[in-house]
Length: 101
Image (cartoon, rainbow, N blue to C red; front, side, top):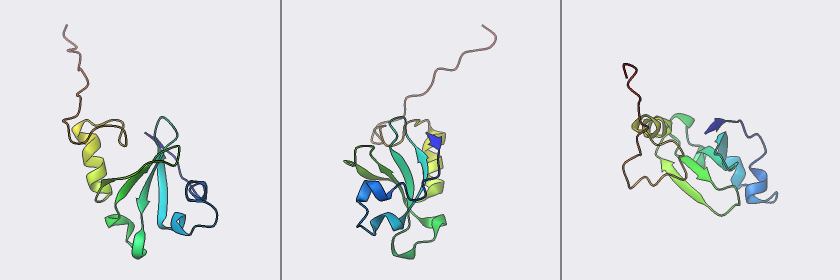
């Protein structure tokens, strides 16, 4: 994941005539240029807004976490490609090399 502010970039995902993009605050990008955003529906406070993944081809919209704290928790657990990782399975842990070897 890369941090990347979106501005009006989400307008293209929904179409210029849609107001839906106004409910999202993009903050990051996946390796395929997909978007991670806070879903600010119904005037939701950003501190409790769900985190969503919007696919790069406009074909996937998934709620990843109920809020940003839960989203960070997923990273701490070892998921590295949120939006692509299977969250029903345990994360693949990176192998840690023993510095004494």
